[in-house]
Length: 92
Picture 1 (cartoon, rainbow, N blue to C red):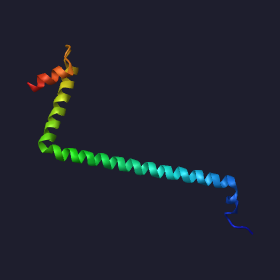
Picture 2 (picture 1 turned 30 degrees about the horizontal axis):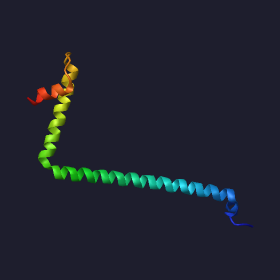
Picture 3 (picture 1 turned 120 degrees about the vertical axis):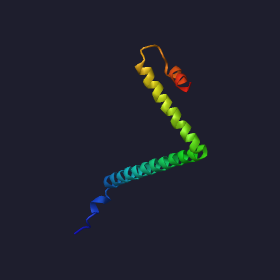
Picture 4 (picture 1 turned 30 degrees about the vertical axis):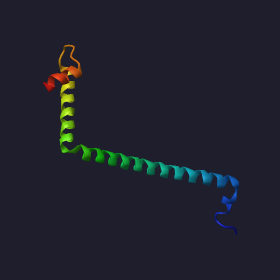
């Protein structure tokens, strides 16, 4: 009677196990790096918005709203009005 894993001692089985182990390790490493990149991105956003402050965030939201209005105006007006020109008109 031989051990249950005795057929794993052949070189081809060892290579297959090593390749499978490498594949698992690569997947784990990729997920860990993705999680770390996401955390670093969140931290960078947090640092940026805390340094900008509430007024800066409101200003950014205002600019975004104006840009959306300008894009809508550009789509709805049949003339040759650009998005930038529409933004200037909204600012005035």
